[in-house]
Image 1 (tube, rainbow, N blue to C red):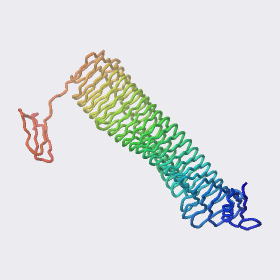
Image 2 (cartoon, rainbow, N blue to C red):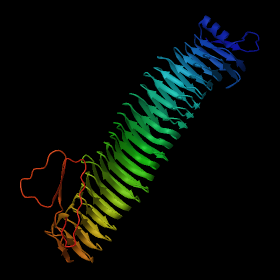
Image 3 (cartoon, rainbow, N blue to C red):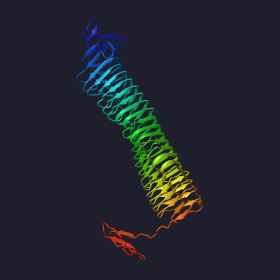
Image 4 (cartoon, rainbow, N blue to C red):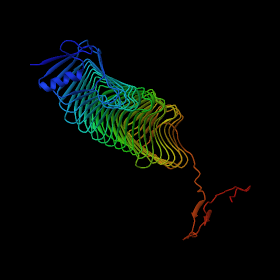
Amino acid sequence: MVARYVVSARGGRRAHRTIASALGEAARRGRPALIEIEPGGYPEALTVRSEVRLVAAGGPGSVVVEQPRGAVLDSFAPAVVQGLVLVGRHADVVGCHAGALTLERSEIRAHDGVAVHARPGTSVTLRDSTVLHGRFLLAGAHGRVERCRFTDAADNALAVIDGGHLEVLGSRIEGSRIHGVFVGGGRARVEGCTLTRTGMAAVFAGARSELVVADCLVESVEAEGIGFVEQSRGSVDRTRVVDARCGIAVASGADPVVRDCVLTGCRDTGLDVNGGGRGRFRDIEVSGAGNVAVLVTRGGAPEVDGCRVTGGTAGFAVTDGGRGRFTRIEVRDLTSAALRVHDEATAVFEHVRVERCPSGLETKGNGGTRAEIGDAVLCDVEMAAVTALGQSWVTLRRVAVERAALAFGAGEEAQLLLEDCRAAGVGVGGASAFGTARVVARGLTVSGSDGLGVFARDTARLEVVGAVLADCAVGGATFADRSVGRLADCSVTGEGQLGVLHNGLVDLGGLRTTLPVVEKEVRTEPGPTVVHHHYEGPVFNGPVRDVQLAWNNIHAVQNRTTNEDGTRT
């Protein structure tokens, strides 16, 4: 049978003047107790040592328990608190030291410390309550928060550490100086919550933690909306992040699963995977990212299946040794490149559609920089649909370009391989090679070009096998300067000015065309050879002419002039 006690600051028959007095009598009798507290202020510290229920008799907010310094409520036994306002400073306002503690329709104001502190092995439930300024801390404990509000925490609003387990359901967290929810070496589930105006990541999983986020709204965050680091795991489902610096960030070995999420108006990046982070991302939407919609860098290696990017600056950027596989990608209406692979990064893109962007795919870097695109459509591209620079390697399979300045181009020392690709309605041309680049195209179709079908210049190499070059206004193919290559089993049709204009360094075996094929002589006189040697003179094993030499010098300047009679000095 439950013992009943009444507490009234005004006193009265059989009433305790203090809550502590009633708690003391309940502990001495050792029976479950109901303590009903009349409205008023109670400047005291409460200690629970037996099973009790503390109830504000006048309803939520009618009883205020306040301490100028130190704890307000310490619980060492199962307890339920209903409708109280607990105000404390310079210490934990509520401490759960043993057993289970439930606070319902209550308010906790922690001006300088922790609002609720659950110690190892305990359990705390917070329901339909408000927490001002302080944080809810679970250290090796279990916690459940339902329909609560956390406002202006000076630290993290909720934190679970040291193997603790936290569930936060249907709650609002706003104005935290650090994180809204922090998980460090524990587990947390955040579902149906709104998190806003946090100073750092709204929800953050630290070292070796497990975090589950579902059906949440994260908005107006100074840093990441949701962050996973240090080998943490977990999932994010059906969640929207609005106006964060970064929507979702994954780093240092973390490996979450993210599904059906929307990242809107992120000031820097929508999705950021870096520092060895991994992750599987499915059906993600990123709109209006200030810098990059999806950034993979410094060893990041995500798998993305289904991602739509609209508006903003750049689409997908894989850089600095990052790598990733991206499937079912849509990119529209950007102000910069849709896809970018730089600096020893590797990326595979499959089933891609790009519309209304300045450029499609850009690659640049050393030979470790590689990109592959399969089954893609790139249309209404202002500049080049695909550009490979540096020493990068790019492979395209079944890629269609519609309405672009240039469809496929490679320069400097890059390598570009095309298989069964097509280009229509391009301005400059279908495929090009310049610098010392190499372009190999098999099964290429170029139609309706306002310029050329394919072309090469400088000392680049262009090999085209089994191509159809139709209705190209200027010509089917041009090889300028000392570029080399071949047109094997290719056809050039239409009413263009030329079929092929070449420099005599091209194999035209199997070319089919009724348009003119013109060879233009290319000047082949070699320029002078320059040898730089800083320590000893060079050794020549044969006749030498037109040579300039410099040694024992830090700098050498080469000058060449032409005399009036045409000789050079």
